[in-house]
Length: 66
Image (cartoon, rainbow, N blue to C red; front, top):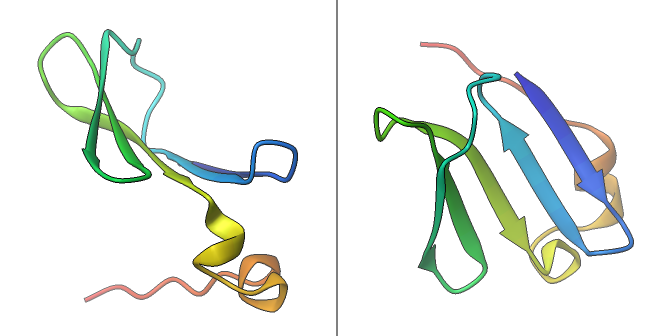
């Protein structure tokens, strides 16, 4: 998994695997899912991330497993 913060486009992107993206769909305003050829989600993009999180929150990610 890769996580990218793009300050220029004010976006946060989670890439779940390296499958080729064949389709993207905005499922909520500013939330875009990328799909592979088998209709699996392989990426999630959040637009306008500066309005959704602080700089401190974006500089430190916490992962939780169940």
